[in-house]
Length: 403
Image 1: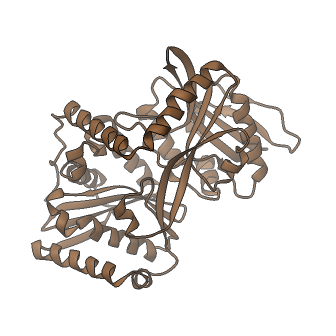
Image 2: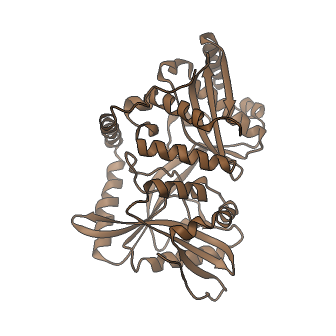
Image 3: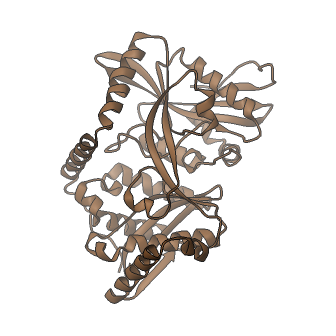
């Protein structure tokens, strides 16, 4: 799809669409725009979008809507358009790049998304929302997942979009040093942290390290994959590295993010063996904890918790303002903070029967089923079982950790 340009709006703003090839050539201005937004997300940076599209974009159309003032980009949203069928009816579906399903991950690999708008250009958000409305002339449904409930986007689309609950993300505001944060927690919390560290030290020498520019990233990522394959996630079939396509994506993503200084990868080694890792993105002054795990036989000593201590302490030392634990309200996250953000699913549709039909069966019914805890648990277990069966011969589970 070649770019097209609309006439200026009364406010002097113009809008155009970009193909993937055109998007690829705009890395610097794209990232500058993302970093100028109110809440910069690593999932909307150029590296993430490019790598995701190269691995999962086959059979889809890339369309980036861009709003500009002269040659200055003020707002954008990258969309993946694909054709699906619902009860036999063809539907053209648009999703923010990265939020669409990939193998074994129906909710995609992007935890949060939004329209990208410069903090000082609120009118550009209005124009971008108008462009989304125009896109419904050829797209049946726009499914915008992972948008924070308090985002200006949710308010801007309130009259036009259906809102569905999607996820909760615990986070920790880093307004002080690690010692000050630790002092604010309960005595029982501090006692357990000391206990975990003592139990690890009883098993052998403990070393915590953060990836440095001269380190071999491929070795670190292979260690992470091996730990992931020996974790409780592997037992349930939910480990990301198990699927070859997702594993390749994660390796390429880590390389791309590290080149921009946005990768924060840390590991804990016990007696020379990597037993826990935490893969984060250091982006826009915040640390986003994307993926991590530990070897399941060490669960009692909780090496994952011990490593998170190092990750948060390091973030405090670098002056980061927040540690975002991302999608999922798991109990282990709530040990660190009681603060949470809620993300919603904003759905816009064309006034066509096939669009209404898709929303009812694919979104409304699914949302009702997800409210049942036992159905969610069953879906998780069935998905994990199928993943383990399909990739039962995968050589990465439990192998490859350097010693």
